Length: 354
Image (cartoon, rainbow, N blue to C red; front, side, top):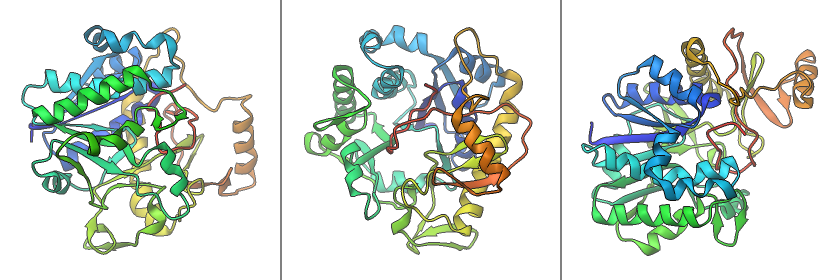
């Protein structure tokens, strides 16, 4: 399993999500290493203190020292855009530093595994590069302006073709990587649209159990059978992309109504509630080690924030809707919040706070 290596990045505000991802990967891909680019010193300090097996934390400063061309772009990009710029270079860094890796797969930190990723690798076979479509549901086709493919899962094999494609992606992100659509470009994501036409052996992952998400949920049939979630009666759910999950106080919210996705009891109980439980456990695990330094702000929906005020009003009214977003569940948690940034409502969500 050590030949399949994974990488991600996040800051201290995304720490609980990153730990939930790690725990789910460790459960369903035992022995797989997860490299984490720590976007804040507080994140690095907490992960170092936790000393988790098969988790390899790296300071952003150390990565930047190895990637001066990437670091040089920081001055003309927002923080989020700069982090997006790092995506392909971080994959290349891991490939260069983990000599046992045959595959290096980037994962967004808001993914969560429900089954082994083996079927994805079986499908990719001898491919050099693996990308996964958004599979936007009917009525959401206009969102393809953000990219046909989703950066949530991107795999590269250690071979000449795979490395050439990865280097091309890295060079394009250094040239331009901004959080708006410009022709055929958007952040680090839309460059993936060009890969199948430019490089051989780029595999487009077809397994519907990979990257189930609010933007594609409406078009698939789900059923619980033999202690597993099945999609279209055939594909076992491998991982879900929990884009847009937010917590305020005792409440978790999802983004299903933003994407006009259903939120039936089956999805709530079999997909979201296990993830919420994992987030709560991760928050409890991480909080004793989380000590943000100067300038490292913990982003919360704080007193004085109009959105927080609105949430308080809605909670008192015992409503289950917040700005069109469904309440996932209510939990009384004593740990500090681990909220995330307010992102553009696309399918590319930063793994840090703005």
